[in-house]
Image (cartoon, rainbow, N blue to C red; front, side, top):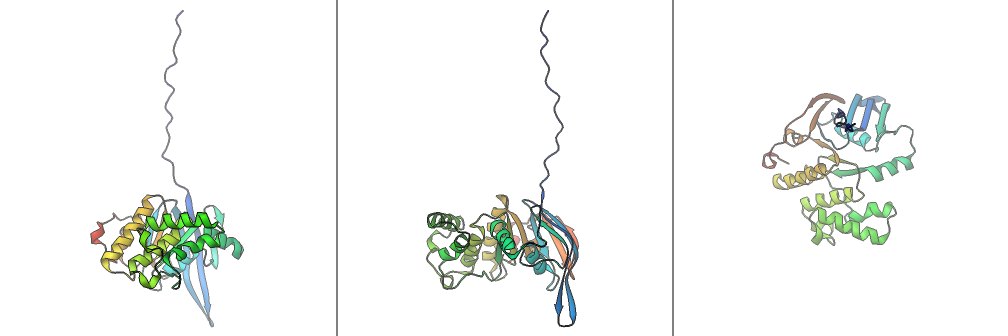
Length: 255
């Protein structure tokens, strides 16, 4: 009697894995009391951002972009609604816990760089590591790696006033990335730069996104917003539109 060899097992039908929501806002509002007047900066905003996405927020001044970015970065808290970051609700967390989340998971880049003027580029990048309690030997290595990634190996000992605008922004990005956060929040990161230098900074951000970083960028320029995977329009504290633009060539983008 001959043996019967088993045939190939039926192939399982597997859907492509879906990235989890890293950021989840449900019905979030932010109201500020200004004297006797209530100002509604965010008005019932719901938003999902998956890990690894590049999302741009665009709208006129006063539309709520920066308020939304501050809430995403745990620098502010909603008046109502809920915000979960990486599966953890931020409502009711202590200031120490919020600071820990910001330190471990979120990097910030601003239009005005926010570098410490009297400190060298290296010391500016080292600051988050000092606050995180990283030992001196590891700090040296991580600062060197962060500056090298930004093409600033020869600028470690230069103060901000000895650097160009583009170099200052690269130092700011190196500082934001030195603790390897999961999310980078960028508020008009090319706003103070000329077109060529702005394009260089956008290329740096594109590269970080391609390496898996979740990037949320605020801009007023639709040509910059068009680089994102999702472009969200804001008006009067509300998300009013969503498009999925195709990225233009870098030379087409203005700072």
